[in-house]
Amino acid sequence: MTAVTPPPETLRAPLVVEFPFTRSLGPVQSAFLTGLRERTVLGVRTGTGEVLVPPVEYDPATAAELRDLVEVGATGTVTTWAWNHEPRPGQPLATPFAWVLVRLDGADTALLHALDAPGPDAVRTGMRVRVRWADERAGGITDIACFEPHDSDPVAEPRPHDGLFDDAVTGIVAPARLDYTYSPGGAQTRYLRALAERRTVGERCPSCSKVYVPPRGACPTCGVATTDQVEVGPRGTVTTYCIVNIKAKNLDIEVPYVYAHIALDGAGLALHGRIGGIPYDQVRMGLRVEPVWSDDGRYPDHYRPTGEPDADYDTYKELL
Image (cartoon, rainbow, N blue to C red; front, side):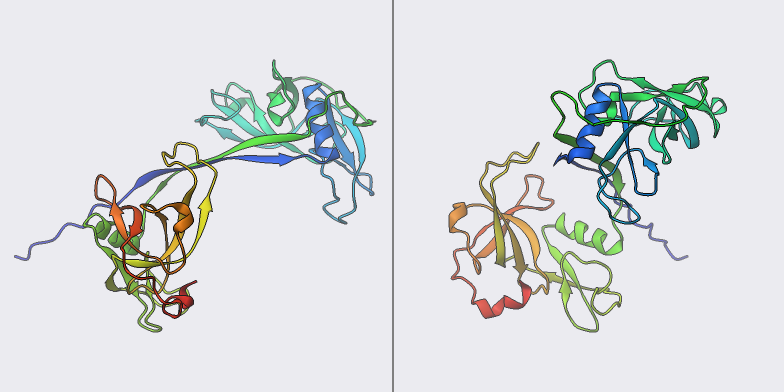
C-alpha cells in the first residue's frame, strides 16, 4: 500500500486596504454637494438638453465644458436594483436594503444610492421613491441618508439654478476601504513557507534564466512557468530608495525612514524593504544590507547595513 501525502494547508489571510482620498471640487461638484447640504439636488444640462445627475463638469459625449445647473426633484423612479441582504460596515443602512439606481424627476440619468425597504418583495423597477435627508448634513453624498418608497407623480421639468450657496463646500475627504481574503498561489505559498524558515526563495525562468523574488509562478517577459526554485540572499544591495516623511496610520515607525528597492544576491529582480540601523540621510545606492527578522521570525522586518564596501554600480544598474 502506498502512503498518500495530504496536500499542504492552503494559506489565507484577511487583508484591508484603506486610505483617505482628499480632493478639491470644481464649481459644478461644489454646487452639487453644497446643494445636498441645503436639501437641494442639482444636475447639469448638456448641449443636447440632457440633464445629468450627479452632475459632471464635462460632457461625456463631446467633452464640452458644462456649467448650466438645474434643480431636479427629490422624488424619482427606480430604474434597476439589487438586494443587499448583509450590509457591511460603513454602508448607508445597518439593516438589509436595496441598492437602487434612481432617475430623479427632471433628470435623464440615474443616481446610485440605498433604498430602505422591508424586503426584496417590496422593491420593483418603476417604483416611486423620494430622498430621505440625513438629520445632520455637511456637504456630501451621505447627506442623502437613503431613498424611501413614496407615492407621488413625476415632476415635469427641472428648474434653472445659479448654484450659489453661502459657505460653499470646496473639498471632500472620502475614505476608501477594501476588505478581502487573500489566498496566494503555489509560487507565493512556497515563498512564504520559506520565509517562515528564514530563507528567501525565488523561481528561475527556464528561458531567460532571470530569478524572480518574490516568485510569480510565470516569467512576465517570456510567459513560461517558473518552477525551478532558487534560494537567494540573504544579503543584497540597495538599488534605489525614497525617504518617507508622512506617518502611516497604525504603523509604529517614526518618520523619516527609508523604503528601498533591494536586489538580493542571486536575484534578477529587486524587492521592496525598509532600511534601518542607519540614519535615513546616510542610505545610498549600492549600500550592502542584510535582513533583520521580525519577532516571530516569519519575514524580514527591515534591512540593515552589513558593513561591507558599497557595491559597484555596474553590478546592479540593470536592476534599477
